[in-house]
Image 1 (tube, one colour):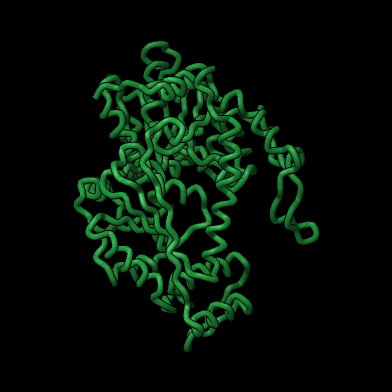
Image 2 (cartoon, one colour; image 1 turned 60 degrees about the horizontal axis):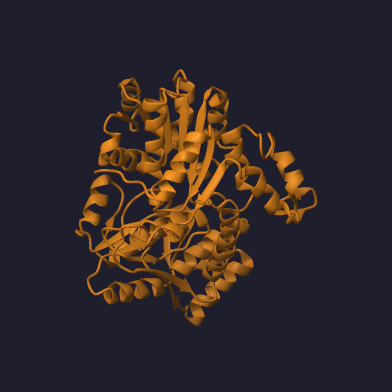
Length: 446
């Protein structure tokens, strides 16, 4: 297929070509993969500025999306790609293969740095947001070899899903601390103040007045952002909330766990040892089941399953994609409905071919980079997630360019439970992220 870049795509390609360090905050569906590959081809085969490229991506994106994209476009036919995934033997064989581009999943970055003599002069990080934790092994490993990298590109549509603090580690990898500082302590001191704390222990920070604008300005010289709705003829997207209500008895159980952090259901006792565990337990209860001792699943209610059945029937045979969070969600959904998990390449191709009426997907394993828009236009959130990044990325599997129908995203929300807090929190985080993206939004008339 011949690649005729849109104006915004050519602008993004030029941004990579003109910046040895580049951050592209590209909304889902804008074609960041072909943008990056086109820039790589220019740098490698036309300008001779780089000789060996490493792409770091989520596992399924590394295995499926990047190889599919390079084989899709005519102008990329003279680039060879080797996919470094699988067993250690398979990874070593892939690294030994002759290629211009090597693609590895982010979980194996530490292994690569430890076991391979580094000779990549360009690195592309697909979903730079996965390097937002400065304590993670992948961050520390890549930082060790960062001085050896001549060119680096960070791609994402969700740069600060949990707030501005995420940006420090991402840009520390990109520019070695030139813009936001070399140490997280200095970044906190300059732009944040302690928020929630217990004496000397600080649990969270909030931005100082004017900090957001200052941070955006510091990174603006290497950063561009683009939102799909500004450049694409995006399909209409309808958000719908389906409320379910607990019975009086079920709500008594929910309130007791929330208040006492200990709940007895029959002979089983459920103990929530801290606030994080309690939040997790309450989300499970809102979904209809909860883990007891030894991971035994204790059923509480079927309210969400009943609502899910109504939504599937209401789709009138149109394919439906269900997002679940807990394993017992999946088990209970499977027990009640005939569904198929989206996990492997065959599942993806069968879904896009319209051969799967009802599919289930876990946001953490399939949130990034998968093109599922050809298979359906209805997404149902059975269980919600606190992660804005996973939430937006999962929605973007269907709501993206190429989708021919109006996308309908249903959220099954258990009334008067933690579900309502999650929906509210996602809205607040989205506001903060939109402010970042708008602050560095590309002006194509420059």
